[in-house]
Amino acid sequence: MPKRILQGRVTSDKNDQTVTVSVERRFTHPVLKKTIRKSKKYRAHDAKNEFKVGDVVRIQECAPISKSKRWEVVTA
Image (cartoon, rainbow, N blue to C red; front, side, top):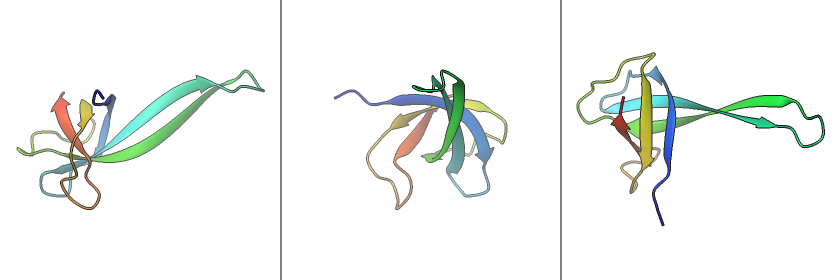
């Protein structure tokens, strides 16, 4: 099974080797036919601490690194 790749914006880089990425998805509501924006936060592994708040990054699924980290940053 291929690994999922998501794109989002870094919202926090305070932890060592970790960034919090907010991923927003848009979809049309099935009944109201209105475009809805939903966002979800993922904690991703950033080995070199190179990404800062506001950067747009791509994250990819990986094996569990810690209790909350199941994603790693691929590119900016």
